[in-house]
Length: 419
Image (cartoon, rainbow, N blue to C red):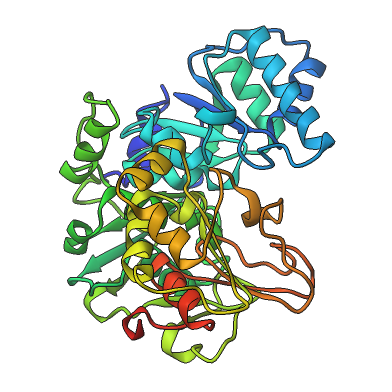
């Protein structure tokens, strides 16, 4: 029996033979990641273990992105703890301040993740890197502490769901619409501890950033990983990130899957997830009467340069609706600089947007865009749980950047074609 992408990637990191889903295997890891919220917990666990060193200072990455720039004393203390730990253990990949960005946008552009890698992170959206052909998944901070010390961890080999893409997407369709449609069809537990493997001729229509967006939200269906093959699209992105050593990755022709489903990109409409779960998905035309108080464009899901370009295309020569707050957060300093050089930030500013620093900020209800009771927000982020972005009495809708930008102009959820 052939191997799925998940099985191939795990097999490449273990001395055991990967035979079937459900098998427990011990694997070496290529990279271990934590942030300013989760790293302090992992550091505390390390100290309680009596460990003094990490397994490889070059392969542990610490990114202070969630509550930074520090929003209060508590977050400043968290970051200081992580900063001191990085200095004490010689960790070179420590990111804070002007070199820091949202972790799952930052690591790919730095060339730190790529095909055939096995990456574990103390953040659920670590699965983003599956868009580049890596087996990447989130773990709890205690497991991350062990991986930081030992350079290995264990996995239960996940069964895989094959997602076949076909057709040519229309102008406003991107990776966010693909994954929202998928989650809407299978539910928030439809891929529980399973790998979502994307395949088919429609892959050619998705660039690397769109693939990372789709992989990012595999966890919103309960997935252990979201996986794409590594092809020329992948290699072009990695070359630009300074990583030229990538090799192809594809599932075996005779790989077996637990189930499969098809998505015709040519028939896909822009998608919106309504409160309070990512699987409460509707085509945008069904929710165009929803009035908004805030729109957020950014995050590890849709804060990349392609997202900002799409938003700017719609916002150019338009202004934000009266009474609506539009917040735009480029995901990394490099993306910010590109948006500045391309004139995108001027378009956003003239439209009346608030342009913030690279930070997770409002996505997790941290800062820079908290909602009051009764307010509604449309965001390009990845979660819309009750109270996710502020008050328990607020509502969060999810969409791609085109719908978000159009809705900021209209003052209500709107199809970008109307703008």
